[in-house]
Amino acid sequence: MSTRREENRIDLLQGTLDLLILRTLLARPAHGHAIAKTIERNSDDVLQVEQGSLYPALHRLVRRGWIAAEDGLSENNRRAKYYRLTSKGRKQLRAETTKWEKLAGAIARILRPVSGEVKP
Image 1 (cartoon, rainbow, N blue to C red):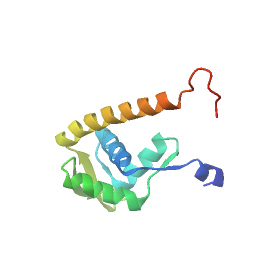
Image 2: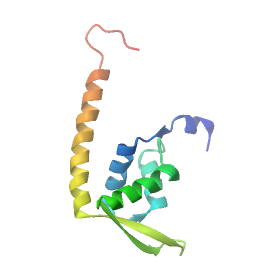
Image 3: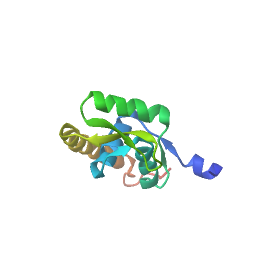
Image 4: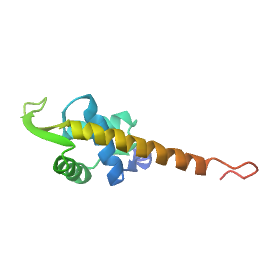
C-alpha cells in the first residue's frame, strides 16, 4: 500500500467500530477478516480495522448478546468463527445509528462556517 493511502486512513473509536460491525453483519453473517475487509472496502479504504481492535470488539458484542458466533469454514476451507447479528443486536444497531446521526449532525453544524467567519 502506498504511503499516501496510509496517510488517508483513520483509526476507529471503540463505539464507532461496534456500530460498523453491527451494520456490516446486517447484510449477512461473516468471519472476522471479512468484517474488517468489508468495512475497509465500503469506506474506500479510509477506515482501517486492526485485528487488535476487531477481535476484542467482536468478543464484547458477543458478551452483550448483540451478535452470536458459530464455527464454520472460510472460503479457503479454513476453520473460522462466523458472526451474525441477533435480534437484540438489530435493536441496538437502530439505537446506535440514531445516536451517530445526531452526533454527526451536531458536529457538521459546528464545522459549518458562520456568516462572516473566515474559513480555515
